[in-house]
Amino acid sequence: MRRREFIALVGGGAIACSSFSVRAQQTTVPVVGFLHGGLADGFGKAEAAGFRSGLAETGYIDGRNVVIEYQWAESHYDRLPHLATDLVHRNVAVIATGTTPAALAAKAATTTIPIVFAFGVDPIKAGIVSSLNHPGG
Image 1 (cartoon, one colour):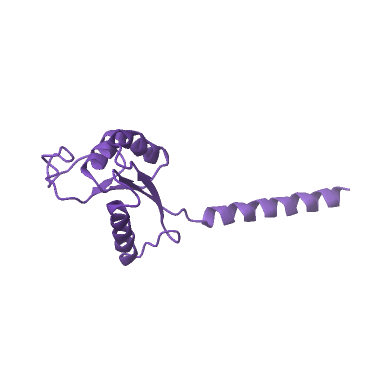
Image 2: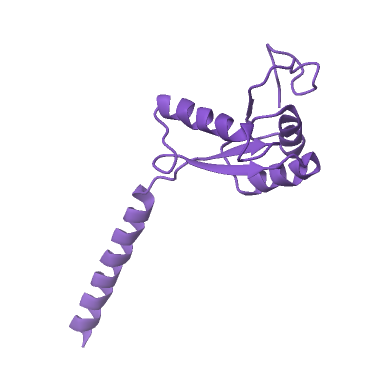
């Protein structure tokens, strides 16, 4: 009996160690939050496509080595704070915004997650950054 118990113990330990090492080797795929104030079917669709294309040019392919979590306010800007908070709770690596109100909502939702924005307004006047040299936050 002792021999069987010993073999079972050693075998069980080996299986436990191998499954632990497999889990340790798995890499996590970064999640990028995409927050937009507009419609997924409207102009936002083109912006999202351009965003995916830009990521692909740098080697990040949606669904392969990065996941993009889309949040659309559908022109209901009062929903942006909730959508931004939802992205923060999902522990996204970065939040990309497509509109000024979305960038402001993201800024209000987090001080630790980087926020990327691209639009034609002055980000200092809009209150998104304190300066271009040291945007902060």
